[in-house]
Image: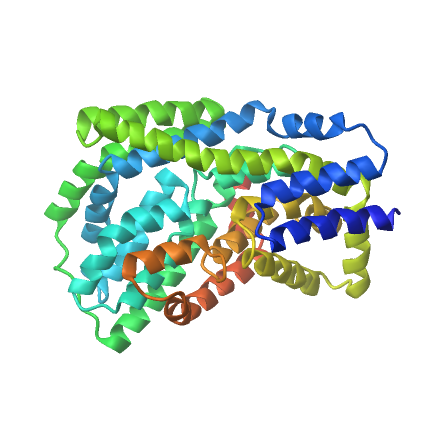
Length: 430
């Protein structure tokens, strides 16, 4: 064990982050210095940078990001809100229920919590304000329900995890996220209903089958993206990468020829936004190459396994401890960063206690989703603050009870494998 090299790698990594350096630069710089210290060839840095993103499956990430942005700006958000309102808007706290159900629909298109919050929140939070809902409550519902989008396919974060874990089945991961995503939505709806009754929030219009059928007709074209991805990948019609490319083409056709809400000027804006998002994601994935090489070369996963197993051999306590570690990282690091850093370290521990890597993927994504809503660097929390004009402190207080609901769902996913594994097993994917 080269303790000096390990300390050099980790100390330099956290020092650069502490000095407000981007995490990708921290990974590259600390890895490069460590590789030079170990006397290895400097070309190892370049080789591992390239190898980290040299995979056909990674092409799915830019396509899914672009497809989500196309549908976000192509009129799909408004139509999904109409569909959700027709389904559940008649309940007490109807707009809160609409918010959550719309996130389920929207998540199946964008796969992004930040896109969900920004797109749906810009429409629903003002609507909820006009009907007498507290701004903090409206933002809390919008932010927490947006996490469903990272669990319900397609999710580019699932693809990142699949590659970080050594090439897991993307279709199995997609299917594994459906039940936990719906479970999270149901739990948030129950809690929102209880608060709505307690605070006397209004009901929506009475249920109308005619309105429901009209909403389905308007939104069915947008929902076709989900059908293309889910059915196509699960039943082997095409790969995840091919489905993402087809989803992109479909999104362009729907947004321009059917909904007529995506102009050439809007298209340029969408492409620029997608490139900006993609650049952030891919530089992180590339940077994880040399960093992961150093972690493996220095046998850090083995050391962590021995340390954690030395603390407790109890499977339940170990899972609780691992969730706590990821949740703590979620308060200071971004989602993609956590995935590429912790997967090679923690996955061996979980395999050692017999946990499925598919189940861990769902646990990890949900953990990271919770991190997006926790200060000090919760990206979704900042979007919610911007939409409402409320301070981070006020939103955090209002969101805390919702976070407890999300933690309850996380424990169910952690300790009840069937929530994640039953559907992919039934489809013969694992």
